[in-house]
Structure formats: structure tokens, C-alpha cells
Length: 388
Image (cartoon, rainbow, N blue to C red; front, side):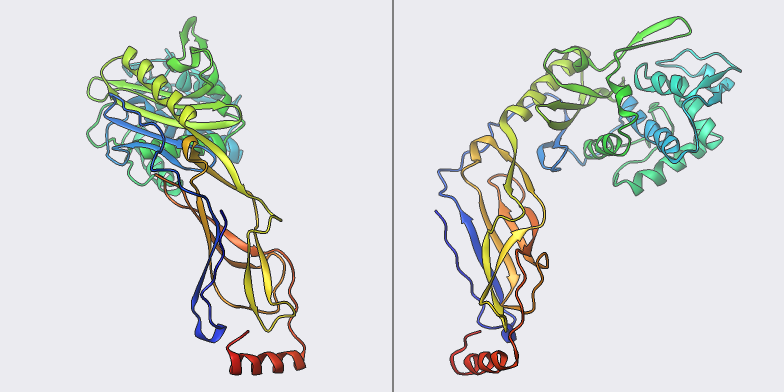
């Protein structure tokens, strides 16, 4: 069913015009089948649209353990992308880095390690020693590096994170949120496509010691997972920041605070499967498709067709594809002349159980201004009859 209306009475009155472009018949209030998880913290987001599919304490701070190594890797990838470093460059191993406890790459004291090896030492082996080597190599000290991490974190949209070290070593002031981890994962993938492949590698041998990637979903057939990072400390529990690509659609998932490795593997698999099963991405408007018309003031034509400037892709619960309503909002009538592509208003899409989606509405064609005689006639018509 399609209905269309507008409430503008004339441009001089500056009244808001709202045009309902599409209104599908609503069958009920059903939404995506809910999922639950034993993880105390969970956040799931669609990579392309940014739609939040699941949020359980997503903005509550916790100690992220080794998942904060994602920020250390971001800093290193950023330096490589800027051209400050090459993969074949080396960093020196200090006594502090060599003696660092916890998960290790097993670097030797007073040796020089290639950047590419250090990346794998952090990403695959989760080496705390490798993190300190990188921190000291980039900033001179781990403390100075943490300051740089915090500055960069704010620049890329991490609003509730605070870093005090490079490895995620337990500290009550070293904090992140599941939402920030999702933001960081999205930025890593989009900002550094040339380096993201390291996260999908299954193993790395350094100093004669072979270690496997700790991400359990990398080894699960059909998971589509190609990154990113696990985390575990006694204080924080077990966590995973994962990214999965299936049939061209990518989903980012964070679960944290679980009691064991098996629980982490099971719960992350369940939640990730749910995200792909219950939600899909759909293009609901495309450039050139006329979605409605807006009245024109002093134009050679009475109306101007409306379209979108680019594809409007939205994430929807698969069960709600038929229950989507959209409207255009603009100040009308629109004064001529109007150029094709000129922004006229905004398309607002209501999606059951999810935040609204929005996109600019633009003119689909040029509309010329009336000549002098036409403008006089139109003004008289408006004065006498209230018509534009």
C-alpha cells in the first residue's frame, strides 16, 4: 500500500512538509528471534551499515586484557601506512620487553626484530614482549606510547577507553568497552586493508617455537571469521573480538567476561550465527528511483521528483522486511530554480525494533524558474487562491 500527502501551504509560511513515500502493511510486532549469552558483556554490529544488532552492557567499562592489543596494532599499522616504517625495518629488544611475563613471542634481549615478525608476534601469538618492543620503538617508552594510544583513540572515535600499557596487562585504569572494541575493529579493517590479513593466519613460528592463533572461530568450518583478537586474564575473564564475512556481509562481534575457553568458543559461535541468521542487508532506495514529489514555488513545473544520491543500504531483521515505513521530510514548497542533485530534504526509514535509517533526498531533475510573466501570474494565484 502506498500513500502520499503534504501539509505545506506556501513557502512564506515555512511549514514543515512531510510526505509518506512508502508505507507497508504491518503484520505484527514480531522482530528478530532474541538471543541470550552467558557473556556479561556483548556487542554485535553490522560492519557496513553500523547497525547495532545486540547490545549487552556495550558502554560499560571493563579490563579488556589482550583485546587491547588491537590498539597497539592500530598504532603500528598507522605508522606503516604513513610511511614512517617498512615491514623490513627492525626494533630493538630491551631488558624490559624481554623479561615481560604472560603470553610471549619469546624475543631475545638485545636483538633486533623485524616489524613484520612483531606484527605476527602480537596478532597471532599475543606476545606481551612484542607489544613492549613496538611501544618502545615507536614512542621511546611504554608510558609515552600509552599516551599516544589515548590520543589516537579519541581521534578514531573510542569514547570510553583508557590505556596505560601496550599489552593489556591487568591494571584497574586500563579500560575499554565492547562498543569501543567494535569501533576499533571496524577502523582496523577499513583503515588498513593491506595489513588486516595477518589476523587470519593460523600459526607463526619464531625462535623455533610454533604458536597457533588463539581465535577459536578461525578454525570453525563455515564461520567466515578472519580476525581479530582474544583476551584473557584472571581478573577480566575470557573475551573475543571477532569479525566474520559471509556472502559478502561482514559482522563485528565482541563477547567478554566468560569463565573459560570452551564457553568463549561456544558462546561466540552461537551469537555470530544468530547475527547472520536473523538479520540481512537490503538496498531500499537507489539513485534515479523516484520516491515521491515535492511542490515547487515559482517553477516551470509544479513539482520536483525526489530520489536519493546514493544507495540506501539498511540492516533489517529478516522477519520484518515487509514492515518498513519511510517518509520524506523537507521545507516546502521548494523555490525554483532547482538543480538535479540539489538536496531537498531527508528520507527517514522506520525499522521495527531498530533505530531509524536516514539519507539525504535530492532533486531527480532540473526545474527552471518561471519567466517574469509566469512569476507575476503565480504570485497573483497564490494571493487569490493560496496556490503555488
